[in-house]
Length: 213
Ligand code: SF4
Image (cartoon, rainbow, N blue to C red; front, side):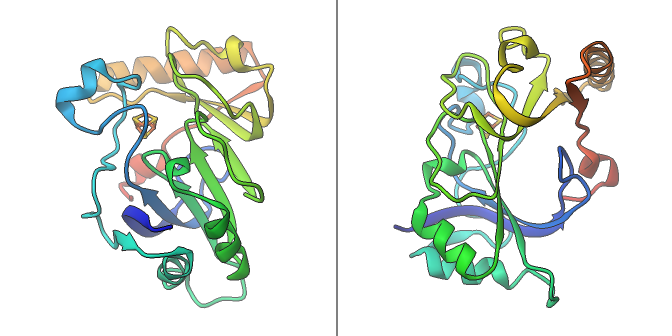
């Protein structure tokens, strides 16, 4: 199987459980909940996306003919150290492409593998950390994992709908908006919800404060 990758970069994880941890980010092209084109946003299942996942024209993106070539491509971004490489498979929706062959090739190269998914597709076995970010009006297939990260508020998907699922950590992440006052309002709402419902922790997109990828 070949893989279509929008971009690859080395940075710090900005949000959720692994915030602050150095990681290689591998952004897969395409998503099943939006085409990525602005003219389709109003009719998309997921309408608040702020990620460009179309094509292969991002930094270090491209088409990789098999799992081994993609693994070798990723490995070059990890500093030479005895610490095993950590990769975050993200998108778009990575589970449109991630398969057992890629998981095996990454593990053979000592990678620890984290996945960020909208939870609507089945995941191959063996992924070390699964973070599901469910979206309103989509059918959630992955109902267990390590981290559930809910963008908040989604009026049609409130936290109480998903808080019984089998995840080890539950995060509310304020919905980002280009309007600063709306951003602040969402952050305040998420903060207040966490204080009232301590099962939930607040996830902030620290990479945006830091001005890094
Ligand atoms: S599911 Fe994720 S990648 Fe897909 S459109 Fe929504 S926010 Fe973007």
